[in-house]
Image (cartoon, rainbow, N blue to C red):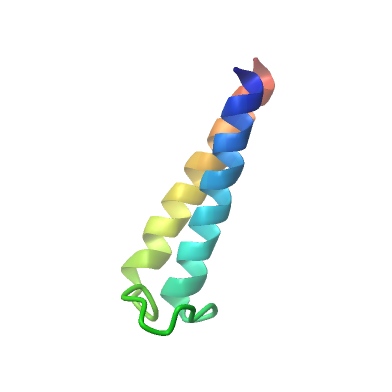
Length: 62
């Protein structure tokens, strides 16, 4: 169970970082994405990345 929580946390963290990069325009791929240069996606990505880090931290304490 601990390993599964860590894997989910890592995926959530990486996905959040990707959303932040797309929202800020640092990673404009795919070009037709609706997320590029849209500031709400920076906040959504930050929340998801923090949730992923919290999940990793919680799993590590088990």
